Image 1 (tube, rainbow, N blue to C red):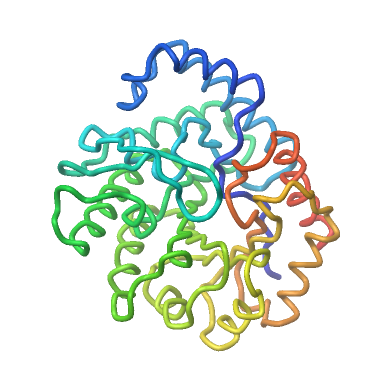
Image 2 (image 1 turned 180 degrees about the horizontal axis):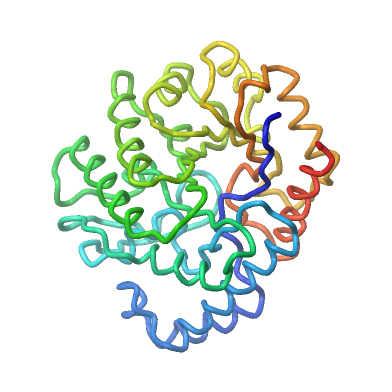
Length: 333
């Protein structure tokens, strides 16, 4: 029987109290923030946020617990925007979500700096043995797509360097059960024809750096057929994340029917950008609909997740969606 795992891609909205507190504290330390050195008061606030995130996930009954990425002001560009060899440029809009972040401009060699590993160590300390830890990172294709290269001079070399940078980060991670690599650019700005293998090779570089199960999570629509086939065959992922909320889900099902799938799948079954909260039955129905279209017995595990990060939602709506995901796994038993 296929294991069903309730989890999320991370990147949660800040608690309401933290927005005000951190805004005030950061107003005095802007120069330090851009280097990832926030100072003791800001660190203490983020520690409290992290503890709340862990408690919320445990209370909801999720099967995997993420750190929550409360520090990631620049969303999936964060691992670069705090790097010593990256200048944080002007404000830009990523994708079409009406949220604006800084533009990471890579000016020197990308070497692992342990920033994300330190966050995960702190989350592991809070979590103890209450549930398995799940790590979250941007995928190398999306991170390279969102950044500006002012050092490597070649797109392929830059993408490979970003992958090596992320792999170095992963090698420093504490024990984790699962790694979600967030790859929205594979849909929003896919590789040109003939460049799919370079993208999947970059993802494999990161996937090979961990013994955990790796989920390459794509969202905001269906993957191009050719790219989908490359990801299944070449990316080294244990599971491919498929968005059943945005875009035409029939196209997503067609890809699975026509080209097969990874050993496991992650299904985006609650909307990470819509304040309407799906109940457990609706969430379970989306899973059952998908499973009715494909041979579900072929999968080792099905991850039930939000299609996107939950950052875009009010705090109370985000918590409600955690509960819906966890409750859906019980409905499906």
